Image (tube, rainbow over all chains, first blue to last red; front, side, top):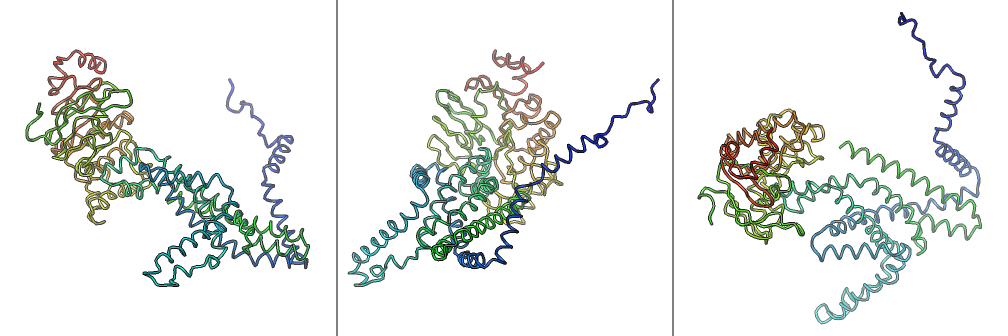
Length: 290
Length: 249
């Protein structure tokens, strides 16, 4: 009769030298090599930045544009969130006028390259708007007096950086509108029914019941768009706004140090996007707990 | 034809509703008296949930009218907020707000709609949680509760608005069998307290014990109407007999 001591002991995987080998290879293969390579490259570049004269001067020049890059990114993105939320609410509205206006905005924005949008705002919409204000001033001259404030407005006083911020905000607002719409539509119909049945009106139900759930759901895509905005902010260099990219272009053109300049520029963007992705992940986990 | 007496708090007069080509309600007329428990039964798709949902405007009606405590709802859908303030509804799927705690679920509409202050609304909420027998779950999120507990919270949430009528749309159909009774017990308590209730349900035991009147619907029409005794023990309507023979073994 087989007792417990007679039960054959299965060899544990650790005991086989072959499987130990396989496990070691697995472990090596499982390492985040992409991160290791990135870090090593980073270390190499930091070494270059601190020792090579060429790199130091290129890097210093690029860093002088970081404030503009960050400012344009943060301000445009914040405005884009407001515009996007507004247009997203418009997209789900039952009001025909509101929903068509929002849809028109989204479709136009999504069909035009962002660079073209920047050029259009800068050289078409804003000058035209100033022209219209001047004309309005001339029209109201009998009331407001000759040379009134409206007539004295000049579009050249509208800083190019701010024109770019407006353009980026409207461009990204179109993307965020679709993100918010998707989030709102992902919340089950029963939530709106329950809120309305309790006597809340539509804005209250949106504000207190639907949006808190919807926004939590769309945090990951919103975070991605913040990172995209940082990258697309480099487009402002096409209009001469002195962000990091513009500083790099100016420096490279004058020094012919293309390798050092553009390597430093790429490194700066990569570092900033990595920091941002860590930041967005932190926000996501915090909101999930809340 | 006038239904019910002067006590009726809900009057439903010749209500029609279409979903595309489907004629879901075909001229339904009935009433609910103050303090009455009206139970609506019938096979799936007979229009009973649609009828209930049309009373607080979750479904618009195409013809006829519903009068709730003097407020008329017709196909133009006016007065709907005035009606909703007087009518509480409990859904099959509970529809609690998952991002709010149980207590916040109960206080949100009180503060935003009834404009009660925070302290008062919380006191009312806690009293109601006692009434539905889960005072200890006040600070939990709905996701941490069982289906039966969630449904009892949903009942408390509706009661917090001091409705004159409570509507129940198959409140136990999404529950595991062992949780059905805890919800039915709370509903029985409510009925005994004199709450006016309109209940769409497949729970024949509840209908027999709690209903003051039962309506049997089929194909968008009321086929039979009467006291539980008349309806269950001595059904005169053939379709009602067939329906009962299928669900009572």
